[in-house]
Amino acid sequence: KDIQYVYSMYYDKLEYARFDSNVGKYVGYTTYGVKNAERWNKDTSQIAVRKAQRETYCLNNVGIDYQTA
Image (cartoon, rainbow, N blue to C red):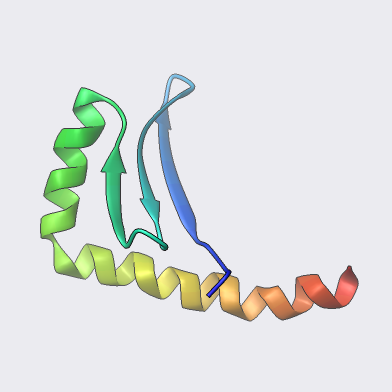
């Protein structure tokens, strides 16, 4: 529950959109990002892929990180 997957998108050092596993959807930070976030949020397969990334990447590696700490 306390593990968070964040997928951020940048252009010219400006974050324009982000997927946050705690929110469960894309959030836009610029006009371009808001427009794309709305489009991506309608695509349920895209949301499912990002949610699966949390389980695939974060949950598998958290045990390794805690062992070395």
